[in-house]
Length: 150
Image (cartoon, rainbow, N blue to C red):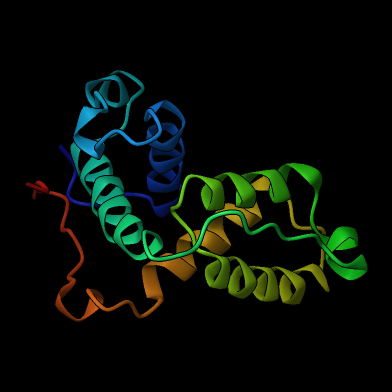
């Protein structure tokens, strides 16, 4: 096992977990052993689960049924795949509506230089989640790679 993990790979693990988790089922119902067969390290899986647990609690308070439409500048900057990924994270309650707005602001800033596609939006989401203040982040510390989430 390695003592570090790639934030990009953690986002890929989160995407996988979100895609296989049945709506309304607990996070513990997802068989993460499959991620090991895909080459993810235990540290990457633990970090993904940790981020999901923290973010899911925050999204539970948001009213459902909100829908966001991109305005012209955002449509020109974000590829459809990047927008789809951002919406998937929102629909699966990993990101709330305020998170989406903050991430879109960052994407627009990045988009002034180049088009924002899936790798860029994943990096923006990862940076936002990793460094955003949440009520539980006061107690958060980074996993070192040799730890497990209980």
